[in-house]
Image (cartoon, rainbow, N blue to C red):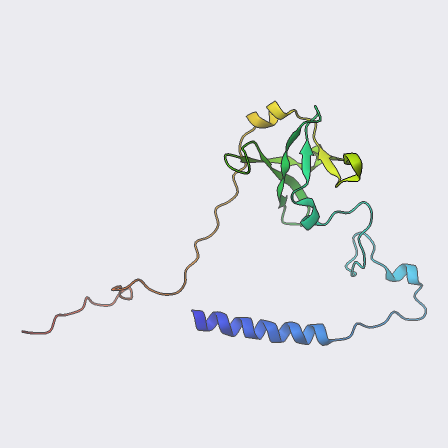
Length: 169
C-alpha cells in the first residue's frame, strides 16, 4: 500500500511539472485586452481578486456579529455544494478559548458584510441574536472515511487462508 502511494505521488509530481512547464498561448492581436480577462461563468483564468470577493483563507476566523451587534462567534469552515457554490458558513459559538464551543451552520444568504471599527478587519453580521444562535442545533458534518495504513495487525492472516498448524512435538 505504501509503495503504491509513493508511486502515485511520484507520477503525480511528474505530471504536474509537465503541465506547469507548458507555456500559455498568448492572446491573438485581434483579441482586445478586455476580452482576455476572466468573465463570470467563463472557464478562463482569474488574474486578480476584486473588491467584492473574499479568499477562504481570510474568511476563516472572521468575526460574526448578531443583530444586537454582539459577537456571536467566528467563521470556522465553509460548506460548499457539489457545484462549488457556497451554501453556508460554519460558525464556532460559545465556549471559552475554543473549549465547550459548538459549531452551527448558517445559510450564506443570512450574512452581510459590515466594516470593522477602527479600520480593522471587516466583519459579518447575521439577523439573529446571540441567544437565538446559542439555541440553534449543532452542525453535524459527515464522518470522515476510515483510513488505513495498509499494515495488518500482528498475528492476523489473510481472509480465506487456513489457520496455522502447529509443528509436531
